[in-house]
Image 1 (cartoon, rainbow, N blue to C red):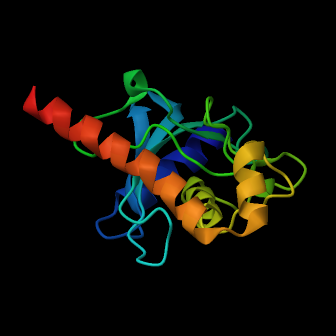
Image 2: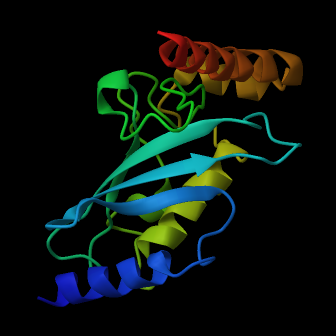
Image 3: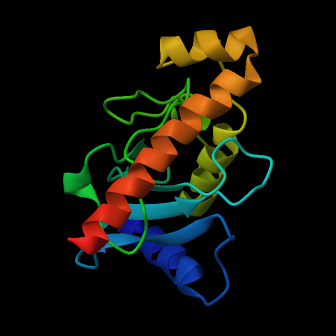
Length: 178
C-alpha cells in the first residue's frame, strides 16, 4: 500500500505540466492499471555530448517494496519493445556501463546496497542521463567500449556512438516512409 501511494505521488509530480527536465521527454507507467512498470523516453540535446540528438527508451520495473529497494532500469534494445513511433529511438547504445545486447545499466544508485529511498524514479532517470556523459570504465558492462574510453580516443568514441545513433535515425525515417 505504501509503495502504491508513493508511486501515485511520483506520477502526479511527473504529470504536472513543465515538471520534467528537458532531457526527459516521457515518464509514465506502461499501463495505468499497473504502477510497477514504467517507460521513459530521454532525449540528449547537449551540444557537448557524444549522444547529442539521440533518443533512448528506458524500461523501468519497480519492486513491490519500493522505495526501500531500487527500480530496475534498462535501455530498450529491440524494436519490438519500442513504446511509440513518435521518436527515432536508438536501440543500440555504445557505452561502457550499458550492456550492448540486453540494455542493462551499471550504476551504483541502482544497486540495493547504495540505493536511498530519497531517490525518486525521475531522479534515478536523471542519474542515468548524467551517466551517459560520465562513463565509468572501471566497472564496465561493455568491455570493448571501456577499453576505447580508457584509450581516450575521443574521435573513435564519438564516431562509434554516432554510428549507432544515425543508424537508428535511418531505421526510424525508413519506417515513416513505408
